Amino acid sequence: MPAPSGFAYRQRGDGSVVITHHGRAAATLRGTRAARFLAETEAEAGDPQEVMARWTGNYRRGNERTARDHPRNRR
Image (tube, rainbow, N blue to C red; front, side, top):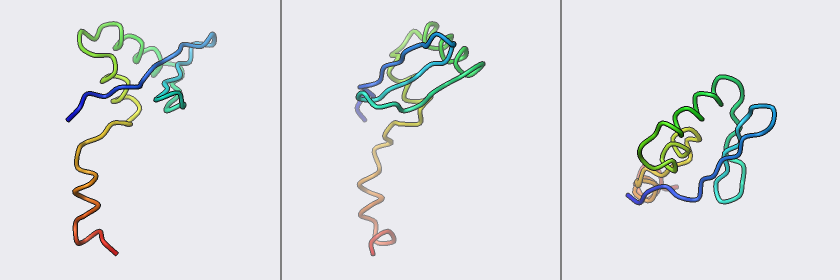
C-alpha cells in the first residue's frame, strides 16, 4: 500500500487546525482535539502524512476495487 501524501495542515489564530488534502479542507479540529493533533504531529518520529491521514479518516485501505467488483456489490 502506498504511503499517504498530499496532506497539509494550518493552525489558525483562534487555535483551530485545518487539515487539507490536495488543497481541499478534509477536517477542522478545535479545542482539545486540535491540541492533541499538534502534540502528536510534533512528537511523531515517523511521517506526519500518516498522522494527518489517520486524523481525517481520509486514507485508502487498498481494497476499494476488490469490494466494488465483488458479486454482492454489483447491481
